[in-house]
Length: 469
Image 1 (cartoon, one colour):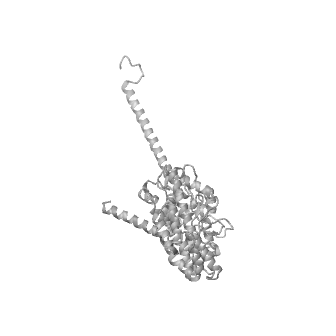
Image 2 (cartoon, rainbow, N blue to C red):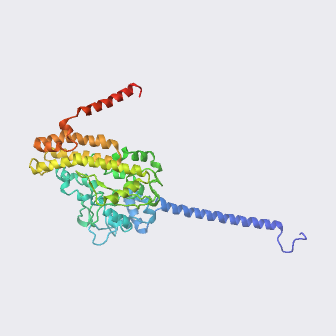
Image 3 (cartoon, rainbow, N blue to C red):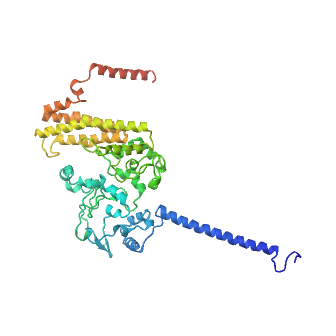
């Protein structure tokens, strides 16, 4: 023992061993702490982000186990497992539980449930969204299917196709049979304006398809394109022809479609707009709205387009969306061009054609029964198909839909089909129509000056090409 070492005091070697053990214990504690923190973080992220760890209550487990054992709706269950509902414990019972007195309630394995989940049910958690939706034009969709406006579907085509055709998008009026069973002529149905047994209108699943209820899926243009497509309302086709659609398609992986609303602002968090961007989603100055008409100025659906109530406020809201990415000059001039095009359709084709049909009806040259004469069909396609395509092309910045699939078809039908039929029924009405602004060219032809201007233009074009231009 060294003279400098006091009796009972550890040696330097002993101190080193003790310190080593302390460091080892401290290091192991740190590793354990980091591991537990990491596990906790992963669990939180899994529960937060993708429904990777669903929370299943005992009651919901009973539903799931039974359905899985009987191989019933297994796809729906697996879809739910990856939903944002699943990690929060929002499952079968929370959505399907019914109350005594509900028209569609029935006892199922000891629990009173309803097959339909309606906006009224969703409202328990999503009150703001449900109220906005139920005041929207979407929620009123089913009013069309049983009205005289749908004479074509109900009578001319036949009522059997209304459920799967018209009501497939517009919504059915769901009827309940005995023991809460839903009438097969009215359900299954996920039409946007479905009238439910509890009195509510619509279905959230029209856009947020069950059972994942994915926000990313609802933001996809194809979600809207399920109904907003075809010869009479080709919004999806016009969108994909536009620069907006082209840029979205080319940059889809950059769109952050699954991000929450507070982190999904155009011009800031992503750059290429979808249908939801312009009509529903949040901007840096506007909240999300589930009333898709909040930012729409014109109705492009009827024979003659009209501005909607409070259209100034609606236009201001839409302009703000556009300004998230575009300069004020571009926004201003786009709306000027769109308004001018819609006004042209109204004044040159829509109003004169409607006035001619009204006069022929008043003169008893045609009957009040729709579609019983050739002119009814020609007039219908003039405004309902070709006229709508032209107007939707204007609103979506889709040149081919404005011209070749729009105004060209409108003009061709108007002058070569509709007008000759009007003349057969009443030459006076046809002459009155041709006397209106924009139609005189058919009677007087082109002037020498106009012909000379066209020839001069083409001669210059040809000279430029000969010169290597």
